[in-house]
Amino acid sequence: MGLIKNMLKDKAFLSKTLAITIPIALQNMLNNVLNLMDTLMIGRLGVTTVAAVGLANKVFFVFTLLMFGICSGSGILASQYYGKREIVNIQRVLKMSLIIGVGASFLFVISGVFFPEAVMRIFTTSDETIKIGATYLIIIAFSYPLTAVTNCYVAVLRSMNYVKLPVVITSIAIVVNVVFNYGLIFGKLGMPELGVAGAAIATLLARIVEVSALLIVVYSHKAGDGGVGDFVHTKYNKIKENGVAFLHRAFVNKYLNTAAPVIANEFMWGLGVTMYSLVYGRMGVDATAAITITGTVEQVALVFFFGMCSAAAVILGNEMGADDLKRAEQHAKYYMVLLFGITLIGAAVTIIVKEPVIMIFKMPDTVNNYIRLCITAFALYMPIRMLNCLIIVAILRSGGDTKAALFLDVSSVWLIGIPMAVLGGLVLHLPIYLVYIMITTEEIYKFIFGMLRYRKKKWLKNIVAD
Image 1 (tube, rainbow, N blue to C red):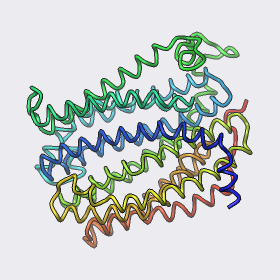
Image 2: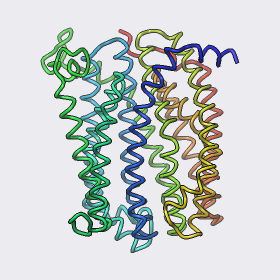
Image 3: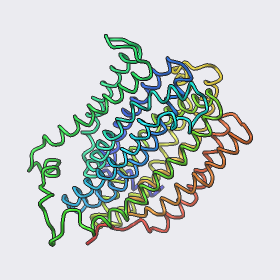
Image 4: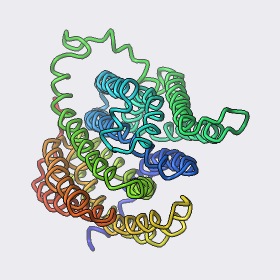
């Protein structure tokens, strides 16, 4: 109780947390609304189409997780460098993230554009699902490099506490996406009726607008404004420090030592979660459609909590970069108490509103029942799941304890989640909601070992000290 009272008295902590959390959560919400609108409109084309697009987007899911790893690893260093007010080093971080992120995106473009049917066959054996998914994938793949650029810039801006700009840009992208979705899927507003291909084109157009608007707004700031202008207009390509080039070996080594485990973490975790989709795709169209819709509901339900985890990572990183380790330790405790309490409320709200949410998608009764039970299981696991997210993504990573985070995330999926999915879905042939419950037992394992690592305090350090 003493910890809670101290937290409530710390107005500066609560104010800064909300100031960063709300814009990040709002942006995440807008992104998920975009995905939700896609699912709702595509849902009018039938269960098979929903399943096909859901499976095709697993490629984007893996790519997104890879980008999340790159951006999280970059954010760790950028937030600590911002704590030291070392702008040139933050620019180095941005350049490294762009090189790796955009470069990696082209690997996904090649697979999606040139081998779409082969990719779809990884997830399903249904010829109709493969055909529909390939049509979608071959177009949507061109949006991946654009997403990479946007994510890299947003990650660095967040580390510097600039969180409102991405919200405005994402809002514009959503309007573009919804308008063109409506027009190109159903042949409205004078546009051709293209069905699932129209959905992909609409998303691609939205991504083009998003990255263009972001870069225009960022680079329109003038140097000398004490903020974004000074950051983007510094002539870093001509700067030498102690006679070394811009991306010198010492910096690259520090970046890779910090970011590589995070990138590997997200990619291996994402690959593992994609294996779940391989199982779902072999459980039938109803199961695949149910889990696709459940995933969309999950993303919307968790936006505020993911926003708080992102805020915690920024604030703790800033504090450790400024060598204020005592405050960082205290604030980490505050975040654990605050997040757990709010997620209990979130879980209750999710259970209460699940029925009207299910009705929005207009699926058959069997699919609706699957969704209902999956959402209930998701809500029950929500508090422990978000504590795990806070410990791994915010606390351990913000202090550079990325190898421990890598072990926790990857081992939980590959040693528990995947065996449970195969056992329940392919061996015992259980219904989708029971398979989903079996998979989520990985969160218990992750929580136990995550708390043990947190208490060792190996994460509590300044990783950008001279």
